[in-house]
Length: 138
Image (tube, rainbow, N blue to C red; front, side):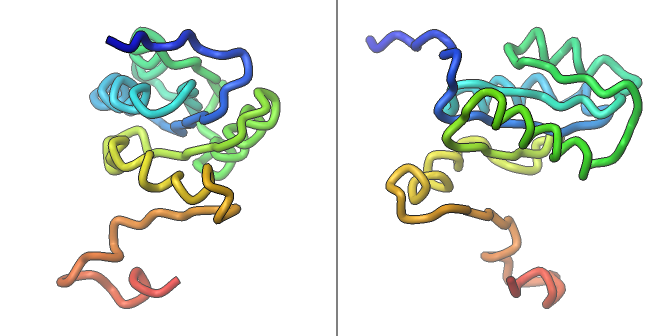
């Protein structure tokens, strides 16, 4: 059986999960995400619940904002952390389980093969009904 490598000081693939009050979901999201990346960082954007503690217990590094600045600032913090940690690939996921971590290998394949510089996933591309037109054009 192949043993899981220890977390590298320079993660090749880093997942960042910006979140606000996601205690019911964050533990599961972190545990699932860890299967596909070298390191998981949760950007806790001023949560008033125990999101940070649950994320840490699940194995994530937690960056905690003192107050809720909004998703844009949390995402900016994720990019800053990726640069500081010299990550080669940054994957952003929502903390509420909207995104399936099992799709990470497929999504980042073209990045790892140097065929793409940026990959954006959308859960709306295959939807057939009840999806506004603006969601299907990019």
